Length: 332
Ligand code: NAD
Ligand code: DAU
Image (cartoon, protein in one colour):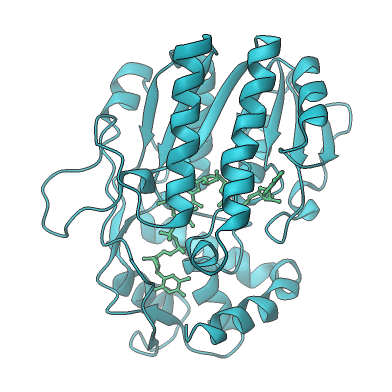
């Protein structure tokens, strides 16, 4: 197999590249990544050029995408503008990358008859009440809240339309919140641990009662590889590891695991339109494709992740100041 991984220099994409590189030694991986503020070439260091090619380029560049798709067997499409808070400040790049970028990839896989796996998010379903006994399933209606999640929902619908109208061979997965190494310091867990490492207090939006369904990024990778190899074209699979936690508890746990007073955090401005709760029912993926998560102990996985940020300060320091300057303007 020769695969293209778009967005492979970002958080989840780079973790997927390392996972596939290890698990499928006879595959060749081409990463297509524009190296935006969120992409980092250092995430892909140490890979053998015989098995790995890096192409710096934009997924909206139709000629480039067409050439790469023609040369490969499948595309695993991670590239996106991924941060909700940024989409509230400036939605335009989200439309360009998440909508037009996905359209560009769809047109290339259609032309060349190649397989696509589209990476999406549980946020396309909107949010659940805290006491709702239900979780998201593949049949939950789309109801996105933010410009980010609306563009991801739009990209999913484009994929479904290209499958139905043009017979494109594509699968979609919608995953919950990932944690693990190489996640940008703008995101919740890396932001808090790096604030502590900088001698400052973590920052909780609003009341912190919001719930996210955490999954280790390596479990996301194993699920995507399973779907790529065994998934049925036209189908959607939800990926989750039963990891529901409210934000306040996660901040308290981060403080505890880093040897701090668990109450030593600040409440900052809430996110406008803040989704209350995400929760995934991944029964379909587990029963139809036999996938199981490996990291079922959140505290243990979180500890290893916090240690990674402690041991890799040179990786995140260059991004830290600009990120905090941006948050300060927003009162966050
Ligand atoms: P990220 O922001 O860390 O990485 C995105 C990558 O895409 C970066 O390397 C960036 O340079 C690249 N990119 C952005 N625009 C591009 C363009 N126009 N052309 C080429 N490359 C471009 O994001 P992430 O958190 O790793 O998320 C990856 C994917 O997974 C996204 O599609 C996101 O919607 C989805 N997802 C994320 C989560 C999560 O918890 N982070 C959960 C579910 C789904
Ligand atoms: O559910 C999947 C989604 O998870 C992905 O589609 C997105 O790409 C990814 O960014 C993530 O979205 P969230 O908005 O849930 O993640 P974020 O890390 O931004 O925030 C997690 C929660 O923590 C959210 O309720 C907001 C809150 N938060 C965030 C930050 C940055 C804080 O309380 N304080 C903070 O400083």
